Amino acid sequence: MRVKFIKLLLTGICALIASCAIITVNVYFPEKAVKEAYKSLDDVLLKNGAGKAPPAGKPPVVEPGVTDGKPQSSLFNVLPDFSFCAVAHAAENYADDLAIELASMPEVIKAYEDMNKRMPRLAALFDSAAVGLTSQGLITVRDGKKMTAQDESLVNLENQSRKLVVSSMAKAILKITKVEESKAALDQVLGKAAATYAETRREAAKPGWWLQLPNGRWIQK
Image 1 (tube, rainbow, N blue to C red):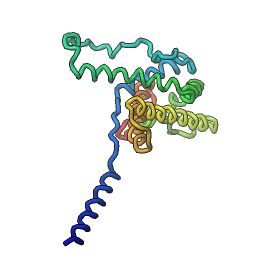
Image 2 (image 1 turned 180 degrees about the vertical axis):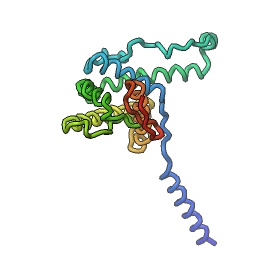
Image 3 (image 1 turned 60 degrees about the vertical axis):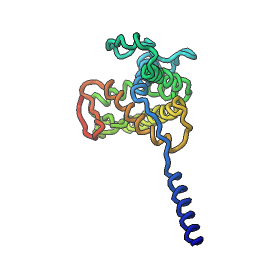
Image 4 (image 1 turned 120 degrees about the vertical axis):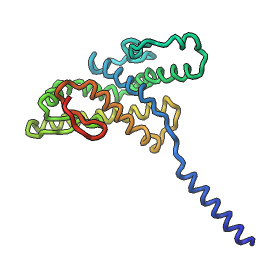
């Protein structure tokens, strides 16, 4: 009887250890804030000139506090103490916090500087349908006959810069949401950060450019 009890006890302990081993941290992904942060960085570091980081302590946004332009419900003014108001406000602040965090990373600023220099040639490649935008926000060759060896090297360098921006965003998300950085946690947010980056790039694409949708289908904008 005692031997049987010990076996059952050991089985239970093993099961407990196994269950603990597969426990993962569920990382919150503020999708809207991430998208807004990407747009803010593009507006400041690409359209207005790369390397011009915003002043310390200020988010790189043109008009802080401006939302999507939709009318705001008066309910938020009448009942400001409701918990969902605080949550919504915190979620909006994530965009500024993420943009500031990335803009404080020298490697990210350098990546944007390099991307800014490549923009004219890459735009020409997109215009000629030589390249397309993947569902992960990277550039892929669609017609190699329209490209030179230098163009291919340019695409590879551009993808390295974009991967750096996305991976930096993943790290910033963990920091802002106060999650300890680990491989498992990064893996959770990296794919979503890349997909959101791709979404911002699709929206910024010009008519005629080839884009890959999240379902893998290619379309011409």
